[in-house]
Image (cartoon, rainbow, N blue to C red; front, side):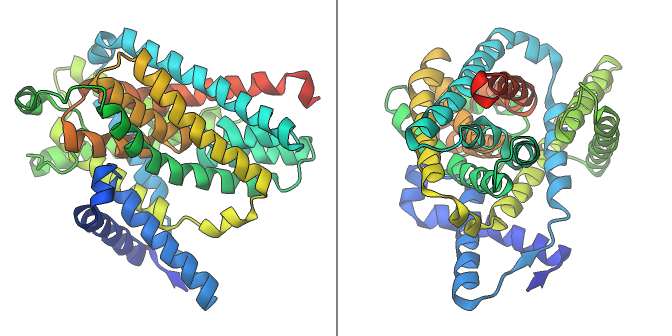
Length: 400
């Protein structure tokens, strides 16, 4: 059964409404601050899995809008990135980047170490490490092709897709329980101060807040987003095949940063409320589409050793976020939100990290620092750092 582009958009909207109701109805989802798109999307993905297995019917959605929604989300991150603010939070950003790079190195060490214990090819350790978990489906697909063609690794592509799917699911589930554990160690933020700061909230901090805007501001912001998409996509195509190759979403984000700060220098700052509105809508729809179209049956292709690696990586992510990310970033409420976001992109993707943080801050209060640092590290720096770490591991003698 095929569902067209409009039907897919309707389904994604219903997934978000379903997630909202599930979180409102089921106390355990609220207790562990599970993001609404994750709750609704996983229920639909499980239903589709049952339909496929029991009824021998596969429902196929037209996901043509999924990539534009993702790119629009990253464009709004760029448009929201004020260089003055980033400079102010520079030391903390660098500290968080150090925490993230340290995790990438250890994530692959855990994966490779387990392959020796389980008696399988160490390349599966990288596929079950930062390539698919911190890198996502795109990075996994790219490297699995290299592993299949140049290293002769059988079923590399299937394993990469399944590992990335597992990571996306667990990245959305793990953040809430980690936040619940860590919140026992810190004081809740002052509600009066968070309320007073509401006017200066960042684009993704209040997904449920009404954003005052005008048609002119909305259209201007939409134009900036589409310019970011067009120029960023062209830039990515130009860089393809060179040593400076970057994912399209990174180029889109970079163009958004240039546009935002260029306009600020000209005395024409972007309309932050419109950026917040469009950014949160793009994020919600992208996550809903990504999760409801997950092919959970791909996980059945994973052999027991690879599943064992992924389970161990999930446990390691929780331990690292609790004992390293949280402590290094200050051991306070901001550190809780940062650790929650780290769970999101350490196993899944940056949109999952933002959704995790929104679920926590919507319940406990604002964290300007987390929403300043995580989007830039998770959307820009991590891909560059991950590529360097992966190539560094592949240079080891065990892979030759």
